[in-house]
Image (cartoon, rainbow, N blue to C red):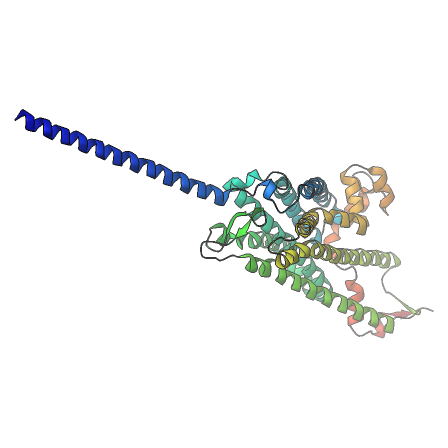
Length: 413
């Protein structure tokens, strides 16, 4: 009996050892499988090593330095523009509201996107953080949309003011202007919600570009083409169409003015009123040309990277890609430079914002625009600014577009 018990006991111990061996082996196999799976996942999400990068180290260092310089200039220039346009009534008009929106988008780009985009040329470890790898491209694409839509909104404003002046006052009321600006922001970021939810492409690290961007989802879909058409191509077509119409109307009005005007005709307005309208006309036309230059600079900054990505998807020419990125970054700081170069009133506002009173006095035709200097002129100007500023060259255009009646003019004796 005892012998049978010992035999059974020995068999049980042998069986236990067998199960332990199988359990250990299973555990070891499971651990090995998990480590292999973890290694595969880590490899798929690991950044491209610097030594394996398509971009040479001197090129990456140069790009990082230039991007940081652009970031500093963009932060200072756009913040100064926002303060100047908000502080000084002489440059506070409908166009200024959209320019503030444009500067705010560029300021956000310099503050939240450029630091990461500049560092990634040297060390892109931040791309391993999922939140940042989603946030940075989300802000990058969104701000491109806001910038171009803001330029389009300013262009439409110029077009309605010149070609359809009769409805200008009804269209550009305060609440409609606010609605237009909100639309620019909501539409630009709202287009990316499907990508943000990973139902139409996704935000992730792109080892080919060596940065976080929009990549294909599990179904092989991406929203880049849609964003390009809706956020870039269509606004560009609208802007080009509006400017074509603007220059056609101006050319037609100037032709009619030359046809009907003569040395014996004078305006029924007082000389002071004529001078004021002439100055308003010149100021408004300068703004119109300035917006055109902003749009052309936008194209010059954004088209190269678009063309390079289409023509060289495998990044065979890394220098071209880096140059395209730097031009894209430069777009965030170029607008304040354009304002300073092309518009005297903006120079005055900048000088006032930074406290350069001697510059402000020399630039202001009616005296200093600072508080306390030329104050009465500012008050009178602010009272009827919203009514008179939009007239500019529209007065001339309206006269030229309508038949000239003898009763409207008097001949000099």
